[in-house]
Amino acid sequence: MGIFKACDVRGVYGKDLTEEIVYKIGRAVGTLLAGKAVVLGGDVRISTPALKAEVSRGLVESGAEVLDIGIVPTPVFYFARRHLGVEPGVMVTASHNPPEFNGLKLVLGPLPITEDELKAVEELANLGKFRNGSGSVRAPEIVSPYQSFIQSIARAERDAHLLKVVIDCGNGCNSGLAPDLFRRFGFHIEELHCTPDGIFPNRNPNSADPQNLVDLIRTVRSTKADVGVAFDGDGDRVAFVDDRGRFLTSDKAIVILSRYLLAGTPLPVGEGAGGGRRAERVVYDLKCSSVVPESVTAAGGIPIPERSGHTFIKTRMITDDALFGGEISGHFFYRELGGGDDGIYSALLMANMLVRTGSKLSELADAVPALENTPDIRVPFSGNREDVIERIASAFPAEQVSRLDGVRIAFKGGWGLARPSVTEPAITFRFEAEDRARLEEIMGGFLAPVPDIERRVRQAWANLRSEG
Image 1 (spheres, rainbow, N blue to C red):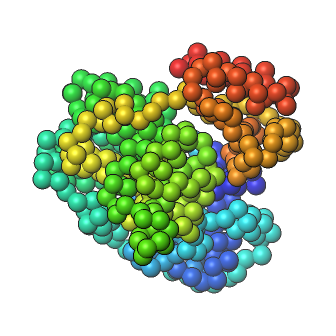
Image 2 (cartoon, one colour):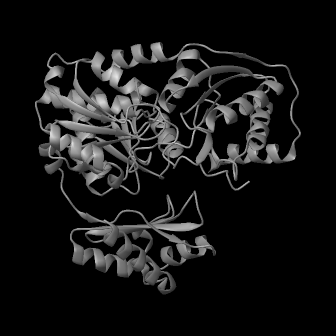
Image 3 (cartoon, one colour):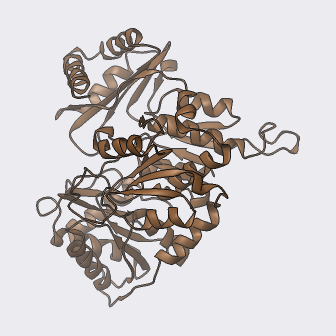
């Protein structure tokens, strides 16, 4: 099945992803879990109720006890697993994808699902040799405990009412829940697209693209708000707009939040030296700007690079007991959340920080060093993508090469990255340098071993610049 990706299951509803397919996946998951309890949730998409019902049926017929928590944001789903003491779970969602998509986020144990575990689910679903059983369904209430939990870890600030926040829920899963929590914390809020609607009538559910946030940017400026926050479709990602109406890149948000969190921990005195506390770890994905690890180090933390992808970042958060983690797509991870991410918690943390420090987000953003970098440059490629990656990697000295995720080549004053897309037959490229001239030089040096690809990369980059 082409719907099985590196971290989850994803496809167009009715074409790639059908009720019959998700029923078989439910049967496969229930078989692998051999009668264990499973948390089941879903997002606001129009196709979710039908798909969720078939997943539930498949789980029950394989003997699972299904704990159906209803239509909730993905972070509430992850909270439910911890709160209910149940590790396995299935969340019906396509996250930030357009409304015609849907999918499944699967968890089989204490850690995020691995590629091997996903492969086992796929093979069993195709084989059809399922365990038969007579499971059950019950519906525990989870939203109120979640609200209480968030209130317990994100302390309300006395002067919160002085901060004006525009909240753009994009008609997704955080509609209703995010405004309610911000009001509980005392913030002065303005709602934007905060009615749940699975066709996402007002904007694309991908909050990481500033082109989808024109309403938020306009509203922040017109209302003279202090900060704007935008959530994706299932509520685990968040994007920020500063008080000047400027989109805040995830790189800058990671730097700002990590500086704030690291400042609240004891200064390190060396790993295990003198009885002192170890330096806190901050996980970041390889697509982040070099400013991220440099800033973490300067703030007394230990930067930990990891593959791009929710599963990989969260797993590293857990195994390294990291304080904080960030991904370029707008996922932010916390120890307080069991290594997980949560758009609402991240937004509350940012708002609380602004109140507590008396800072303007625009000033904090301007204090983050700016380098010249490209967004993801996706080049369709149906051939042998690993051969392209290897040709690049083998052309440079070993000390310049990282193979953690595709290939990343370090140059003086910048870097280049190429990695196979996990969602489509394409190769994703990204580059960074001190200035535009050096960026062009690094792009040329990085692509020199693959001249057949260079023209396509440069054309795709030119197209992105003309669109922006």
